[in-house]
Amino acid sequence: MTKLLLDSSFIIALFRKNDGLHEKAVNNKDILTENDCYITYGILTEVITILGQKTKDISLVRLVYNYLKDNLNIINEGEIDMYNDNVFAIFEKYNKNNFKVGFIDCSQTIIYNEFNLDYIVSLDKGFKLFEEINLYKLK
Image (cartoon, helix red, strand yellow):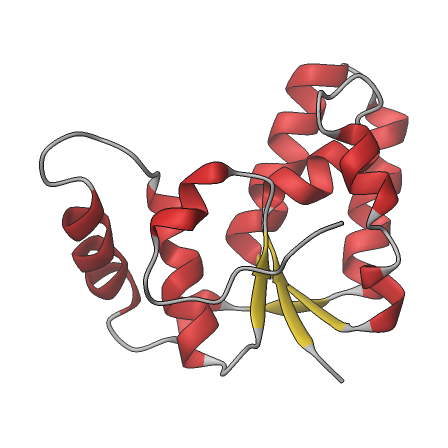
């Protein structure tokens, strides 16, 4: 089974109906049941925070929280040796001249490689910059 690391952009778009990428996420929702899907505690936190801020709908946020914890593999990135230092090295590499990608996105490259995952699933165009990963091609 293919191992996918999900980015917050995909999850948020899937559950937020007025997200500009909602339709694209919905058209690709089958990947959640057809693959072995992973997120990190950082992504879980980001999804819950952004959905709460954008929707103001605590019932939806609870539904998403329960879905994520009950259906996806959650990686504890804090168990990775020198995690923040390694993420910062990636962050510095891609943001040397101007800031193109966020710290949490850079963390995905470390986690992807540490856990030998097959693809990252993201709707964030910044992921196209990363040489260290394979980006999943969505429909």
